Length: 360
Image (cartoon, rainbow, N blue to C red):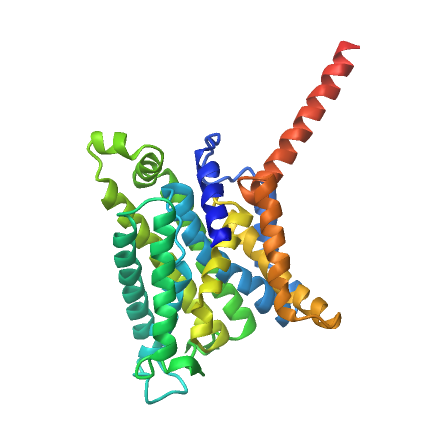
């Protein structure tokens, strides 16, 4: 809970920082074009392991964290139930679709099971948000964390729907147009397309009237209410949109691993999503994907490194926690904040050196 409390303070500082206006989309940014090109040709330069376990997993976790970033960065609401919503969506895909647990799954085709899962998960997250918006600060974190913990214990103990602690295995993935969409390359492009759509949707909403009103609610809810805006309605609508984004990530998650179990929606995993968002930065949509890449790299390679040293592999979380505390200590906006600070320092140095030469 101390990490969550530190994250709440970090979110409060970061969301108060004013950023210069930007055009959308940022078509004049060479770095953005370079990253987009690399992501598009990634199957040509990466093996199946890196393509799925590193990059596809990064995009999935980044999309989950993006839903939290939208709430925290633009709405000032820190939610710890975004992974829970994604897990609920994943469970619904397994329950309504086809899996190895024929006594539980209903056997619907994926094109019926997925829309049903998205609708139910969005409704679930919206209801949770309707409860959370009645509180502020640490109490919002407590309510969303309580929802996540309750769902974890419910799935762990319920056998009729969720198959208890065993979970649901061998979940079927889409096959159509003669393509196995869970094969490495097709699945990577599906994940990339969903992540890109969610990213641009958040970018667009941040500049749309709804997003601007939500940011006004974040900064001064009393004034917005005095101007005639329904503060709670805007917040609940933000939870609905964020829930849909998290639900999309949940569908990709269950297709990725072909199974879902209570361990996937544990309290620790819920906090991991918060850490990902805060480490990357919660004022820009690219931040969660940066944080997800750092998290996945640490989880993948630090685990092997610790095992080779004869240490418990689970201690990789200690490294993640130390990195989280260090980044929060040095920057209120994660890695993005550190990058912006470095660029400002470089610009000042260039300006000073240019001014010195001019003076001489």
